[in-house]
Image (tube, rainbow, N blue to C red):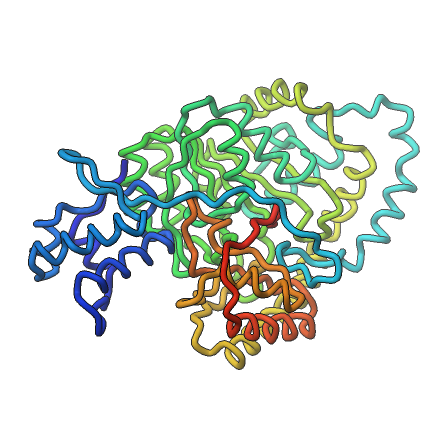
Length: 465
C-alpha cells in the first residue's frame, strides 16, 4: 500500500480551514482530496499524532477528523496498522438510451473531410489483395510501412517488423494485456485515466497502482514511490494531451519516466491516441525515443474517424512475435479494406492534422467562453490540445450533474468513470469535439442542470471514449 507523509499531506491540503469546526473542515478537505484522486484509494494516512504536530493542531482534532471520515465511509482504520483511504467503486450500470440527446460521453469528431475519397481510392486498389488469402496477423505490409514511416518522421526510427496492425487502439490494449499481464500482477495507471484501459486490466485480474496526474502535469515523485512500493509489471500512460486532463508530459518528464521504467524493469506503454491533436503546444518526441523497450499504441479513430477501426502497436521485435502468438486466440487480423484506407489516410497525415487542429481550436474556444459565461465559478484548465477539458465543478457532484443534464438533453460522463475506485466526484470531462453551436447549447443546459436539485447516482456509461 502507498503511504503519504504528514509534510506531503500538509502541502496538498492547502488552505483548508473554514468557518466550521476544525475537525469537520479537515475531514471534508481530506474527503475531497480522496474523491479528486489526489489521495488514491488505499493510501495510508499519517498517524494522528504526527499529522497533528505538522498541522499545528491538537491530536484530539485530528482524531475527530479521522472519526468523521470513517463515518462517511472514506477511511478504514486497522488497529496496529494505520488508517487508509477507502472509496467505494461505482456500480456498473448500463447507460440509458441516448436517442435525441447530444452525446458528449464520446470525445470524438465526425469523419475528416478526406475520409470518403480515401475509401474510394482504397476500393480501387483492393483488386490485387483479392488474389491473396486476406489473413495478415501482423497487418498488410503497405500499412506497416506507412506506420513505421509515421514514427520515423517524428524522430523515432522504426522498421515495419516493429509494427503490428490492430482493430483500433482498444484492441491493441486488450491484446497487449493478454500477452504480458497475469492474474495478480500489478499494473500502474494514471489517476485519472482512460476508462477502457482500466477495464482491460481489471478483466485480466491485474491490481491497479494509481499514478497521480492533473491538468498541471504528472507527480513523478509519487510515481517513483509507487513503483518502488508495488513493482508493477507495466505502466500505462498517455503522455500527450492526456485523457481526460489534457496534460502533456514535458521532455524532462519523459526522460525521467523512461529511467524509472528501466530501473524497475517495468514495461512502459504509451497510448498515443491523441498525440497528434495539437492545438497550441508544438511537437514533442515520442516517449519511446527515451525508452527502447517501450510499447507505443496509436490509431486513426481520433484523427480520422471513430468508425474506422485501425490501430497499431510499435514494440520490440520479440514482443511483436509474442503478440502475434497471443492474437490467434482473439482474431486473425484486421480487415484488409480498412487497412488500405488507413494507408491512404496516413499518406495525407499533415492534411488530417491541420484540419483537426482547426476544428478542435474552434471547439475549445467556444467551450471555454461558454463555461466562463454560464459557470464562472468552475475551475476549467484550458489544455494545449486533445479533445476535452477536465473541469472542477465543485461543490457540485459530477454524478448528480450528469443525471440532471440528461433531463436537459445532454449526455456526459461523470468524473468517477475515469478514476480508480470511484475518485473524482467533483470533476467532469467536457469534450470540445462537437460543433461550436452544440457546445454552447450544452453548456447552457449544464448550467441549468447545476441549478437543479436533482439527486441520486448517475448511470455509468458503457462507453466513454
